[in-house]
Length: 240
Ligand code: BV8
Ligand code: ZN
Image (tube, rainbow, N blue to C red; front, side, top):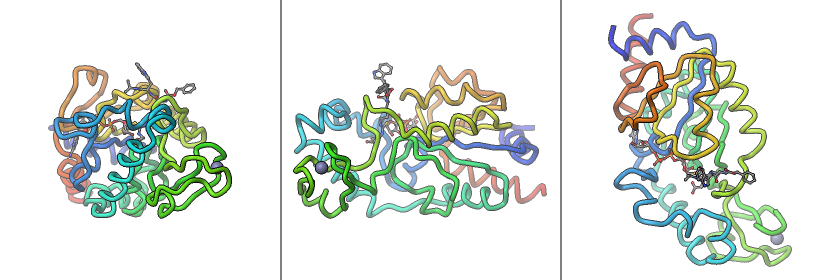
């Protein structure tokens, strides 16, 4: 039995499957990841754009970086892989998705049970008083109407805590899962990179590049997220 068939079997027999995704889940939608050769962090220093210091002391660069990401996402959409995960949720094969992605593609593809561990790029607030703001006001580089503070997307910047509810949901569901499938992430960002090791269940890694620290997985499927998910879905639908 090859690894694909093994994972399809595990998916069929698992009573509780949780998927953890990263930027590699969305590259086949035309959204660059962060650490691959074509990733954002190979072109831009994350310290200069995705930290609280960048927001507070270099707002023009911070604003330019996130405005560019927002505009790019307006031209991109979830791919068949996102839609397969949404179908698996509807069919009761998949219990929940925890994602590091701020692109909202899982929701757009129809998934309902999604924990956004690094926030969302579609909602905005004032960095100082927390008052919510519109995308238009952020893109127009307006200041907060309440306190003149800087506006920002509700993404988790480096050095910031993760949203408590999303974190607790992901942690408790992964701890009690029979099967955890990690898709398209380098697992280099803390604390999300600790999550796969916290499950009592089987651990599967689907990624284009397999880094050495991935040795603790029970099964590794080296390949592109959309392609691997299509093959798994075919196996699930054929050997019913
Ligand atoms: C915190 C939102 C604590 C914004 C993001 C030194 C050592 C260790 C840790 C630290 C350290 N210094 C600081 C830290 C902690 C830090 C951290 O981990 N830094 C790293 C860089 C070392 N973590 C934090 O700051 C976190 N907060 O720790 O708070 C705290 C405690 C008390 C009080 C206050 C605070 C917050 C982390 C969240 C930061 N925000 N995003 C935005 O999007 O701009 S993280 C950012 O990286 C993205 O969200 C992204 O999701 C995340 C992880 O990246 P990946 O998704 O894995 O993407 P990557 O490119 O790395 O990998 C993609 C993979 O997919 C590749 O392997 C590629 O081969 C593969 N791939 C590509 N295409 C495909 C594919 N695979 C399959 N199919 C394909 N088609
Ligand atoms: Zn304000």
